[in-house]
Amino acid sequence: MIILAVDFIQIIADIVAAILNFLNPIVSPMGTFMVYWMEYVLQFFPQNDLIVYVSIAIAIVILGLIVNIAWPGNKRPGFLKKVDEVEEKIERKVEELDEKVEAKAKEVEDKVEEKIAEIETKVKKKAKKAQKKAKDLEKKAETLEERVEEIDEKIKKKKKEKIKTEELEEKLDELEEKAEKLEDLAEELEEEAEELEEEAEELEEEAEELEEKAEEMEEEAEEMEEETEELEEETEELEEETEELEEETEELEEKAEKLEKEADTDDVEKELDKTTDKE
Amino acid sequence: MGRLFNVVKGIIFMCVYIATTMVIPFLTFTWVKEVQILGVGIVLTQHDYDNIIFWISAFGLLISATAFFNYSSPKQSIRKGTFAMVQIILNCLYIWSYKFSGATEIRFEIVFEIANIGFISINVQNMVMLYMGVYFLTILLKGYDFFDFLLNRKTIREKRYKKEVGGNDLS
Image (tube, rainbow over all chains, first blue to last red; front, top):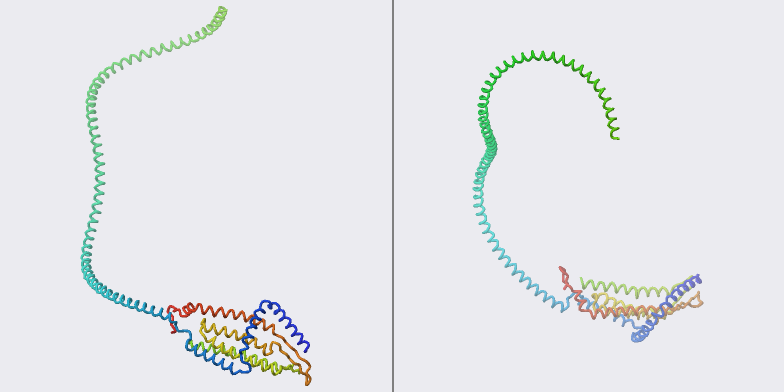
């Protein structure tokens, strides 16, 4: 067990040695300097006399108590106190100014309130008057509205009448135009009537003439009838003659056909003669 | 609220430092003094033990007192920066005090019944040196903080006491 403990200590020693070797070149010069001055200082520390250290410790504690109770560090320093005083003066002045401003503001507010009250009373009076006027005006307005309505109705009626009159005017215009046209037509008709009258007169005259002529014609017709009877008799005679002539003509036609055939042979001979003559 | 809060904060941190720098090391070394493994006693010499306890108590007291001052001071104040730096320096001295005490070269004697069989020696001086280097960097940081608080005191205070709109002034 002791051997194991020694091994364990050896391991720890190796680790510590490794750390020391690593940091030794950096830290050990500082350590040697520290050792130097500490050895010098420790010469002045008394040995085997603990009372000195106890008394020093008590003195430091009492001193610490006194100092830190007397000056706990929460009192403002002198220069800051002056700053505070200046700030306080400024604040006082600001407060005074604020008070003055407030007082003036109150005065102004009072005046304003008085004026507002006066204005309100005036406004109320005016409002009452205005209300009365408004009522009157309302009544007037109502009457005016009624009148307006009446006028509107009248206007509507008038408009309707106007529309009707316009329509009537248009109709009148149309009628006038038609009348004018009719007048023109009447004039034309009159002219035509006159003309017709004239023509009628002429026709009457002509009719009279024609009547005369008719009479003459009747007479002539009678004569003609007589003549026609004569002519009919003649025609019957002529028809008989024509029948006879037709028979003769048929005979002649037959003769003519025969002659034509004979004439064709003669023509061919004549042409042959002509060609021989030319050659 | 401010005063009481600061003091309470300082007391809490003082208790923490008393525990970590005095009580726990004291108990550890007391336990190590009389530890036995399988009936074999590993014994610290009485001289070494007394020496260690003395330096632990001395620097533990100083560190706890400065921690109280440091943590009860207002934030970003010069006194806080000063005591933070002092605390780090005392921490360095506290760590280094282990060398004087013999804790950097711990010698465990192995005694079996009456006979002294031998001893085990652990040399942690290099480790302490490394730790010192780290502390050196911490001191540099604290120094930077201190000068920052010193040079930018006005702006820090202006920021700290800046009145918020609608807020309360604690003065």
